[in-house]
Length: 358
Image 1 (tube, rainbow, N blue to C red):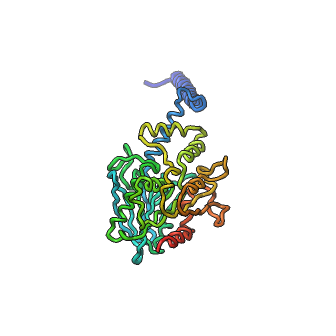
Image 2: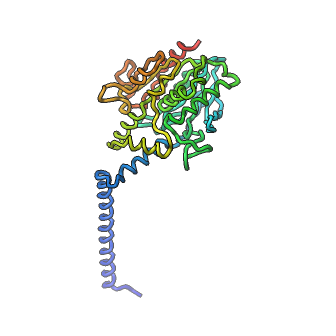
Image 3: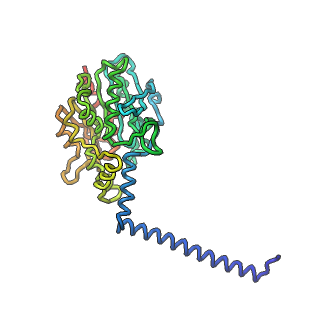
């Protein structure tokens, strides 16, 4: 049936009214959501905002995004083997074994920070990506054997929880659970058919450094081994203080105690406590740190937290300060600058290894 002009005008009118009502409804809904969001954020009724954020932060700590390894040592001209390291709690760690170009009697065991893999992280932190293989290339050219592995729940290793788990479930502990990975890597070298008599240097980074400290405390009989000659600790942390600064920087809120309590309740462990672990160390240590890193620099005291870690270290220790105003100007004072520094400035770690190995 044909529609006359009057009916057509009427239809257009009704459609116009409907569209206006739909537009008003959509604006009202958006306004409600915005107002509700603002209300929840600033008023925090029933602690809703804090509970949501705390859950997200704890999840980020114990089940961080699993990153891949987009490159391998062969991309830098190094022959290597894919190997597995199995921990005492039955977590399979994926590792690269890079043998020295010529016969060597020194092995360097390398681990990595949280939110990275043995490769590094293309995503990075605060706009700074990181890749460890250029640093490893320097060690390789200096004729050292190298073992570098993904910590539990990260990269290609087993572990993790829930949908992010592979093989044996094991939460990421930001150092508190990873000490078992460090111990397993040492046992791997000591049991190796070619490396078992080697002198050993640990190159441990951030979370990995805290995990190494704790491994020394947990298994003193294993680490009181004359083959272990030194530890290079790149940016270990006072985890409570760093977590507090990280949360405040990202949210502007004081949530660290709630995060700690929630993590302990749900997973049975808290934050790493470097100051309690480092007194167990028995070898010389070379520290490295971005001095004005916002996550570890104490504005009240005007010093970096690593100064306290060094003071608690009972053995010979020194530090490489990193930043735009240091003797070697590098980076912009951001935390992840430290994980790029030795790619182009390997001399401090090479000199440390040479000094403490025969």
